[in-house]
Length: 606
Image 1: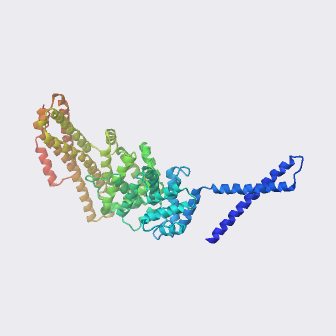
Image 2 (image 1 turned 90 degrees about the vertical axis):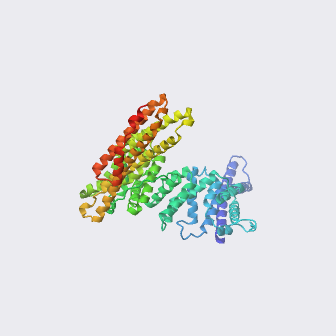
Image 3 (image 1 turned 90 degrees about the horizontal axis):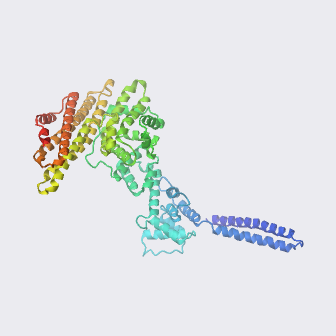
């Protein structure tokens, strides 16, 4: 170190001599020019004095320029020197110096560049990983610390401030930088948030890939969630544009879904369990697809059918290479025991894409065809038919979770667009639930307005039951979309691999899964019809309380309920006819519903 200091002094002296020499030449030239312009030639001593004065002036100018060198640069160099002394941690992916540089780069990006980034913030960006021992070595011995009156954090903050002030940085900048590193600032401090963002982005961009090694998914998700909570929206935008492995991408999706409050907090919908041979076929056919061009091919097919998908893909996270990673991420969870995580991922993708992107339920149809056709295009000629079948099954397994959330999130226009899209759901079943919920709403409104003039005679208990029934019917919309997608998935997966001689156990498992979804797709419309009929019967004693001006609304509500029951009963009949015999308990409920006298004529006669 002594040698380095001596060499630096020598180099500075040579610089000064060079500047002085250059200035001497300038001074002598100026003196000569002055002499040439006079008739009387001056003495040589005068010329020499002029040259000497030029040299002295040059040296003084050099000193002035050196004194104006930015203290920030000197402070950063001092910090970097200290960071170089800090050994690399065994489990770290970067040295302390590399870490400080990365955080500083993110600070510059978040702040708008070198000219806009506050000096204290840049110094704080370099310093988070400076350890006590390194600071103790760097701080001059004259900075004595009273260990009895300072905490460890306070001593570290004081050491850092003393180190920065020793570089020539103004006292208030040094103090501000030390406070930022120690997080000793007011809540909501903008510079503190930028520093936190930079540290979080450094973790996601540089450290997450190594952090995930040897840790289970729950640990990685928890780390990503804590990181996401600490970041601003500006940092979120940068974070979703980073490179992630399929596993890290999945953990990040789960984490963001949880932090943003988009998790399936109600009864979570489930995805069908694909048979083992279908999962094996999915992965083998996926191996034929070039991952480097899959995303572009998929986007090209999807946007050619639905141009508005261009807006969905106009997002950093929806770039082509991430689309291939997303497929791989979902395929990795396709085994039966991993399906619960597949469900969380599918729900998270749908929820985040709807809230922060422009994904809509009507986009599911072109995306399905784009996915299946892109994969089939790369399949061997003799496997195209079975590849088409198994990827249809896979899409509907994902849609069984994603589509219900999208349907319930749509506004009226979006729901109408989704109904018109070339996908079998939402169809008659969900629409029956929708019109039934609106029919119940009209009855509630008619009874509620009438009760305003005579609250003591209001049907309070009935109103509570109708509100509860309306909630059930909205839930039935979600459940019907889930059940129908699940049934379609099990139908496509049913018999996959039969030609390869599947064993009896596999065939039995496929049949069991099919029967499970056949039951669900029959039970949902049955529940809709039961809830509606029960609500209609409960309203009969109160029809006389309806005001004359509200009779049209009451009758409209009754007709909507009657239509919803007819649709539901028809769907039940179709499912039992096409799918075969359903469970005995469902048959008993169907028979009871069929034998019940419908209340609609009496209820509408007011």
